[in-house]
Image 1 (tube, rainbow, N blue to C red):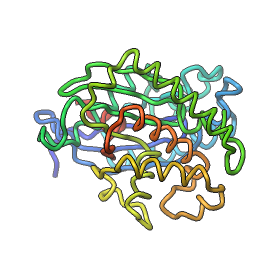
Image 2: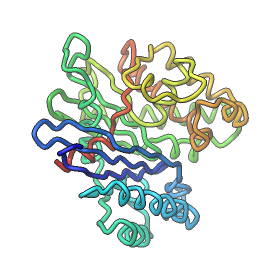
Image 3: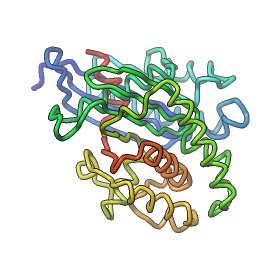
Image 4: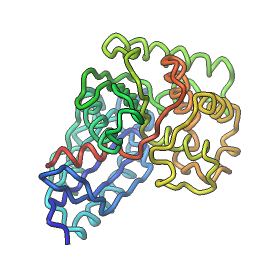
Length: 312
């Protein structure tokens, strides 16, 4: 029986909502996972165009929250931290979202800034890396590709610089990649948007200093599963796998050329990511090319683990 502190962390993003229940050792900071859940709810559906959270998106998210609240109660977590990211930052009806979360979890949802999001992502991701500098050279550049935004965080033992930019797999899909498959003009427009966002990130984060590129979130982990040739998603095999830059480029090219039906036939792609994975792959490709790195290290530990660890 663990003597650690049992906590629950909820990360509600633009595309997915995730839960981690874990025991934390207050002395060492070690995390023992008890339960981890993920559901695609697409809270950010249409928010880029309308400025509000869609009624059906709220309904999907609250249904998932009901299930998560029951899991948290069953595991007896002592503390809950609920973090909401990109989709809710500027939504005109965010108060409705807040009230629904409070009702279900008894805590106030935190709509964190891009910098806070980046810091939590970095803490979660780097907690999983070996301290062997020969294997994972520092500084790390942790890149968290979400539905509505992408975070760039540079650091070693601690964060040295961070920037959140408004390109993500849902936002780029809705804004540009609207045909099936997308046209070359649409891909080029998305690429220009992404490259401009990387330029903005580079003004705050010295990308040239990165020695290890660490990729987080569903777009990256799905690309890793594809690169590994997995028939079914295997979190243990994906975690700390390495995707060569050439494979990132080829995978992005392949996904962008496929129809929705062809991507849906690939069992390793979660059904909720089928329509946005090509945009996520394009974002990763542009980052890899900009940095000129030979590979990306894939981490299954991310902002969700950072939210849990922040409760020590």
